[in-house]
Amino acid sequence: MSKTSSPQGENTSQASASKEERGVVEQYLLPFINVASRFPLFPGKNNEDVVAQLLGWTREEVSQAYANTEENTRQAALELLKEDEIVDMIDSLPFDGEEVIGVLGDSISLDAQGWVYILKHLLDMSKENANFTFINASQTQDTTTDALRRIDQDLLVHKPDWVFVALGTFDAQRLSIYPDRTLIPLSDTWENIQAIQDILEHEVSNPPVWISPAPILSELLEEHALYTFSIHPQDLAAVQDIVTGKTGGIVDPKSNRMGEQPQAWHYIPDGLHHSLTGHMQTVREVLKTLVEINQKGHANQLDPEEYSEE
Image: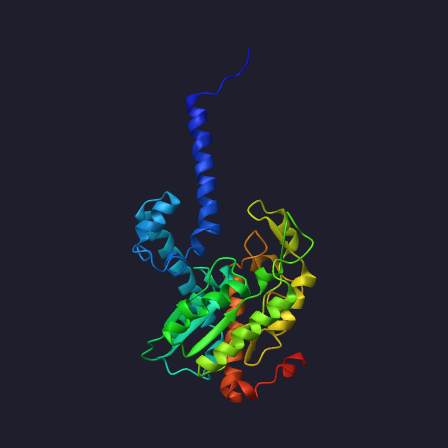
């Protein structure tokens, strides 16, 4: 006698699939949605109902998910404040608490549970009468070409006092359908990064702060069902060299903040985006660089060659 599926079995299967789908959305979609920046003219851009409808969730579910990520980043900031070195660095930052801080990046810095928001909590907690304004002008999987095109509309209109540039990872991707070249030729990456530097030096009073692309766990990325590209270490290393050769503050110039051999616990399962501990590593390096800037002064006094020394 052949077996037939019972209605109860079907419901269980559907519930399981729904739970799995929800997990994928929570980890790989919700943290990287920036409706306001992606669609600046859309009237509902700042309405959580829009995100809820996009995901097929209720507004309450979306609000709770965002509240969870907010709490996670706040707790990460509190953990960092337990470190004496972090407290000492905060006292030496070039901020008075009123700065507008801009971030131009990709999905790694857009992450709602990422280093940008951990840093914001850290500064708000540790600076008396803090009134920082953070403008996160990052977009999912942006290349340097994408970011250059929107730097004025998404970032400079806010008149930032400081700008962090966290780009280059997605320039180095090789599409599965055409793996013979990187998506953005290295010469174009160089020209885009140089253009961004020229713009920021003209438009922003403080030196740009460049965040080197962190290594990728290539095996995990290539095996992941959500992605149709790969990133090879040698391609990413060439982009890292361009970023760390710029004038200004260089965060993690050797690109080893995830460990000399990158540790898997600093990444979510795609091997590309960072876990909470990985983002905390970036915050540590950002603080070190800001202290160096405060000690050395203007960008033109910062020599990138110094970073190659042990």
